[in-house]
Length: 379
Ligand code: AMP
Image (spheres, rainbow, N blue to C red):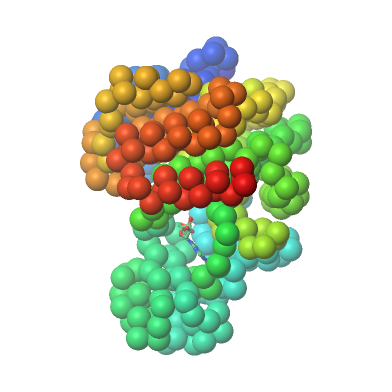
């Protein structure tokens, strides 16, 4: 099968790595000459707006997909008319716009933070009175890894927050006092078959995901599945969909969805029977989905900005480094490490995760959170 991917970053790269085992070939349309997926297929190095380039992709590929939601919507709509493409432009149009996305959550009875659309400074002042303080201002489109966001703690912060996001159409939402950040990753095939991965518990710093832990047999698993299932059915979705959630008490609130493979699901490469990457490919190609179960706990540590010594990672039992082949730069995701619990017990596992966090250059704070969690579980 010939797969065309819009984008050539690490998500495209990992799709291609897993697709090689299914006998698939890949072509990437990506404007970056140093696209890290390029060694895994053919690379059309051109702007997304280049019509000749997108025509070349559509001619070659049997199925097209994309690796991030900031690809131009009109390109996806136009390709969809020429070639089998998933997830659909309809799903993308909702997922890439925070206002449409949160409104859809509301329509489907999926709980969210209080939110209001905002198009100007005066409107923002009025909206803050309704959603309350503290609040977060988020651009409707183009935000990722905490970019395009400003926290409003007091009335006097409003003007600065509006300036910080660049005065573009936004939503403002109330801050949710959550006990855990979770994500559920699900996959829906062309025939409507659906499968869910175990929840991931996620830790961010400076708006960037640093650590994900798989949550096997979590009490909120079925609640999360019910929420994402509504979205999958509503959008007649095909492919992998990720839904980011906040836990408050025993209730889940949706933060946002991603119409693609997701960073919090990278642990599935070693940690689940079939990885999210393989299942995304299976789904969009109309193949039967693979098993999503996990038999042991897994952790994923992101490598942000710089890569640690590979040998030091390999010294840790059951740890697998994934280096993306990207240049090191502050704030850039350049790799990740997966750790699988080898059955030595929760204490050893937590200790190894803490060691990996240290290698990744994370501060003690995150390791301490894990320690406290582990102590709470064993006490
Ligand atoms: P987002 O880009 O919406 O995924 O936001 C990035 C991170 O900011 C989330 O993973 C949360 O840690 C935090 N965040 C976003 N929205 C809220 C909210 N309404 N309440 C509390 N924290 C939030």
